[in-house]
Length: 356
Ligand SMILES: C[S@@+](CC[C@H](N)C(=O)[O-])C[C@H]1O[C@@H](n2cnc3c(N)ncnc32)[C@H](O)[C@@H]1O
Image (cartoon, rainbow, N blue to C red; front, top):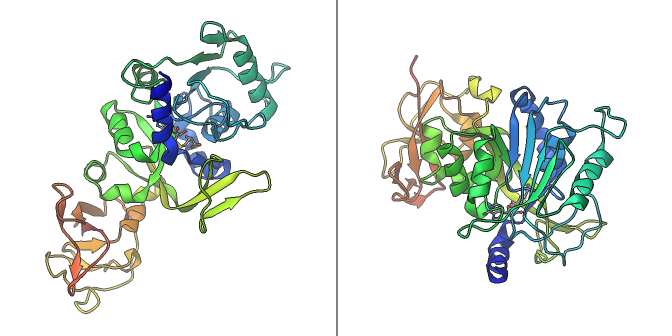
């Protein structure tokens, strides 16, 4: 078991990017009305360090949640602790916490940070035989199933938690993004999650965009994440804050979801007319190159290649996604490389205007 945990810890090294509270607030708040009466599951989230769990715990009554569940992974190192000084030498167990009610010490529900801390620490101090409850809320230590380590989102225990949940909200391990999405689609769950936008062009993800099973949320861009002290210092996109906490910045990060997003129903307005000089055809594929999403010609009804950033403006009633120009062999919808005047371009999404 010790070896297995070490292996997991090595694998997890590239996955330890902890999300900033403000980035979570900026996105998650926009879906507030969709959370009422729902069970939220943060399944890559240690309750003692995840801002996803902390944010939903703080909004528990305001969002009218039914239940909040978080589970954490045995292979995950301690990156920091929200409630106590961080001790990276500790091995953390795979926790599962289930909140059904949050009140402050007076029994009122205008609780704060200290109340969340009190509830968690109280449960932690009561753990016996791997579980504790205060009558309403529960904390337990996950065991794993012989195949998957404790807290692995694919383990039997976590799948059982997934089944009783309505919406998964998290930042999953970057290295397992595609498997993570596949599981959510298989179990027909609602989700809101962080990921790298480059995933869009790959074979397991693009068809889901084409079938309207997944789309982008509101925010995207460069995000700063807390990383464990063991992460190497870098010349760029790296900082150490006044508390000694290391941070790394990742580009091309966005939110992937199947919750309703208003902008998906808004018409994308373009102001350019088509002309063959500004919009030449690829050397090797019968579609025009549109190098900037903003320039999509308003009067062209044929196939157009657009940058991946288009997905941020995608309204399925206005455009149809036909495939991708990427490597030419990545998947059944990856028709060719995007080559223009003999030069290979970045990946392009192939779209066509829906004629009304
Ligand atoms: C990108 S980090 C984000 C952590 C947290 N969700 C947040 O946003 O702050 C992904 C987390 O998933 C954990 N992890 C890695 N492999 C996992 C697996 N198979 N199942 C569940 N969690 C895993 C990592 O150790 C890490 O803590």
